Amino acid sequence: MYNCRAKKAIGQGQAGKNFFLICAISLILAIIPFQESAGVMDVSVAKRESIADLPQYSGLVINARTGEVLYSKNATHSRYPASLTKMMSLYLIFDALRNGDLTLQQKMKVSKLASEQLPSKLGLKARSFINVQNGIDALIVKSANDVAYVFAEVIAGSAQNFTAMMTAKARKLGMTHTRFRNPSGWYDPNQTTTAYDMAKLAMALRAHHGKYYHLFKKTSFVFRGKVIKGHNKVLQMYRGADGIKTGFVGESGFNLVTSTNRPEGQLVAVVMGAPSLDSRDRHMLKLLEYGYRKMKNSGHAPVSEAAEYKVNRRKTNMLFAKKVSVFSALEGGGSAKYRASNG
Image (cartoon, rainbow, N blue to C red; front, side, top):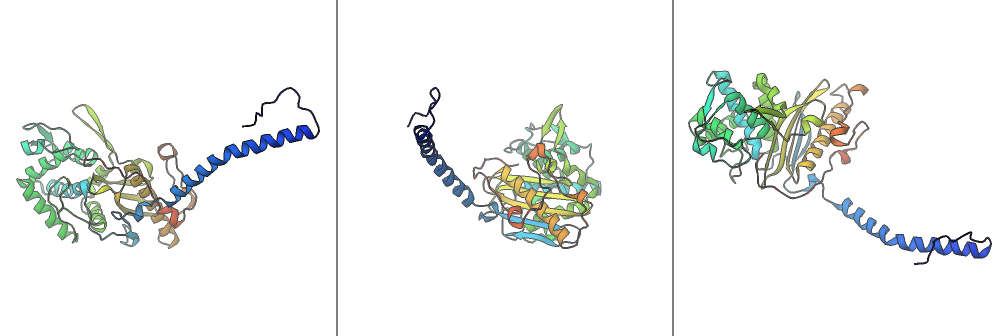
């Protein structure tokens, strides 16, 4: 490359002009390869599939007060629920509490089968005990599979009996495309649901068990002196989010059901089959934003400027104070790498 280092005073006149012209051309030629590389990268990013284009994706947003569907894609397609299953386990637990069959301080014995469940789990030992309150927290925050089996055996005598109760309750709630085969959500090819059925379950939990619904907003709890944190980050990212549950197994992708409660309306949104935790959460934020804006534009929600949705900048480094188009609201992305766990 031409040496462009300045020597002592470059003379004026044509020689000096030619010197600077050669330097400029050399710099341009040096930069061109980087510009071409950047161009290729931009095209690649632009062509990257959105979450909603992936074959395993399902998405749904419902106005929880009116039942109006604000957004739906593949919402009635069969999907693996993963730990969204525990929403139904919790529904039956709350039934038992209401009926007096359980109390919050009741101690439950851990069986050998429960202790042998794969993660995510609390790591309970066989013949140890856990009380109902801690167990509920563990299901919601930790998505603990061992605890799911403890509850199943205490309430129904066996996990098999409990899952039969789960499917029967699903039918009563109008969840016609849902079948349960275990209480934890661990992968079973015959344990399937739909985004629409999961939304029905979320709304039923608020309607029928409002006394306990606030528990779904928990992001941590203390168990045996240790703080156990969850990974439902949307609860901390989105103003008005008040539940409900995450789920993941390799066969399902990353699932999430989120409910919101704000003066301008209540939403229930479902994302299933996301390729990563981060892409799932970001897509959920955009779906919720889209839902509230659609409610506003259709006249179903009186939204003031003060009530405009904002995302905590420290948590997400994003701000949705400005209007978001339908296309940007429904875009997504992320890594397709799966982890072999349930949560």
